[in-house]
Image (cartoon, rainbow, N blue to C red; front, side):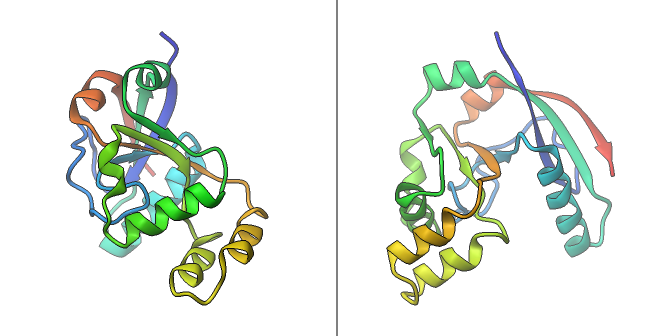
Length: 163
């Protein structure tokens, strides 16, 4: 069993993640989000801590990604492409496209690309221009666990640190 280390940044210790607690119209739906890039999770923890006026916390987990990909209903985006863009737009518009999956992985719609997504959603940028802008960025990966049983089985809490 090959596991990877993933992180969840925030303001509280999360030993037992709950998939349906987040906001419903996020990039990959209402699930538990982790990242394999530690710095990105740390940055997110500090953003949340500043908003909430609390201490930033980084939760660490072991994720059996291979097992999830072989057992669960998965969607993996390898790039900021038209498939990713349309999925993000549909999710943000409340169309609940993530409901078809247990696990979704792909680029974060963060401050490097969110303006492009927003301009495209508002009809102020056509798809070709949006894709050209997005192609200038290498995605920072995020994973969204949408199924509680899959999460319980394959995401193992491995500690926390106050930042």
